[in-house]
Image (cartoon, rainbow, N blue to C red; front, top):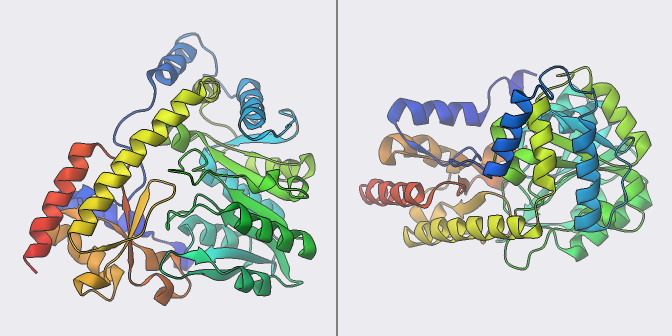
Length: 381
């Protein structure tokens, strides 16, 4: 695990603190989510609900709320008693699924660039990571390459949509082809859908588990932190067929065991919020995306159109930088802003070398201040 001993997020966050930079690296909001969830958590703590160990697989109220939300949002009929598990954030659930479902030597096919915890989780499971690069100016999946990457050694396809770090949302046609590949090869799918409600314009998120033949082979991961802007509460979950969720449960109970009882109860209330909450949430984030995207484009960066997530991806080559890592390491001291180089999410650094990821889940005044600093710092080149 030496290759995973440090993370780019730790390095860049440390730089941000050292120089007083605005941190557009890590994907966490700088404002809290709905008061109704805070009030629910406070009430649960005050009333002694969830202050001791909650049930090992998650508070039943939250598991029921997850099942009801999946039915309402996607038409999925899910048994909260056997087909849902709650964990300490989506990260723990993803790692639990990898440890449960991947054996030593199994291959895991993943779109590249990938979120860094995938690489660590596959290594912990002693599996073998097989990257399939996103291609073209819009960073779309090469479905032919994906099909070729799936062999008789493949155990699982790890899918992330809306996709971090690129900001793409997989289209129904792309999902249908990926489903066809998984079914023909009889492999499992681990679908990281932490950003399921963070899609913009007409790029509606479609869970791959809703496609014919996919429920029975898919573990789908969700995130209360991302959905309700309470990332510090660390509440995530997975849903899927009882046999796969049972395997995930066995592993997950030996990691954090349980956590966040009152926060789980608050998340249950959040999932019952009307559709208007999710619509307003997307509209607010879309405005911040547009603000940051337009500003970065005015500064001369090549901006990819974000379809989902918290992130804008840019090409730094128009500014004369062939290497995003060098750009990001120089940026805090030069402009007082932190971003994340995409190449650290790749086995082949050349795939992500020219790209940099910026988080827009910040207050508009913070984004404007960051753009002002960038304008001044880059002008001094």
